[in-house]
Length: 120
Image (cartoon, rainbow, N blue to C red; front, side, top):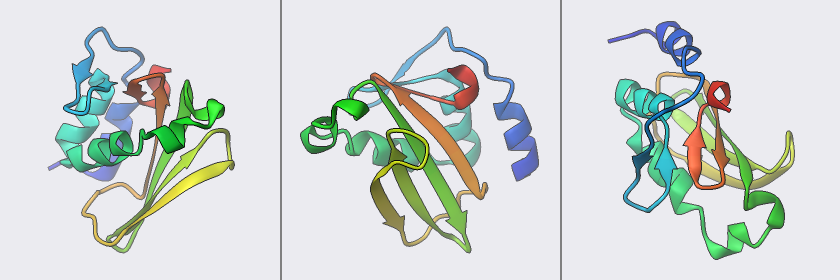
């Protein structure tokens, strides 16, 4: 099992993706996201982000092409936040329990593809 520091270091190595994986909800994700999900067993995080892609959320034109997602974890509980710009929160989901090993991860949803910031 890798330490959180090792995972963060390895995530920084992803700077693009030649392969896109299709999620069961129809959206896609990159090599870096697949690595994150495999290493931290967090496919639930992809499910959560993709399940929020509803007509209500996407009715905001700011969110149709670009979204910023944060997962913050403290004492095995977390909060998932969607922003359309830095500190412009539009959605918040409390997560009662998680074993996600990192205290914070930031992801981007660009059109229909979930990516790491280093892959942008």
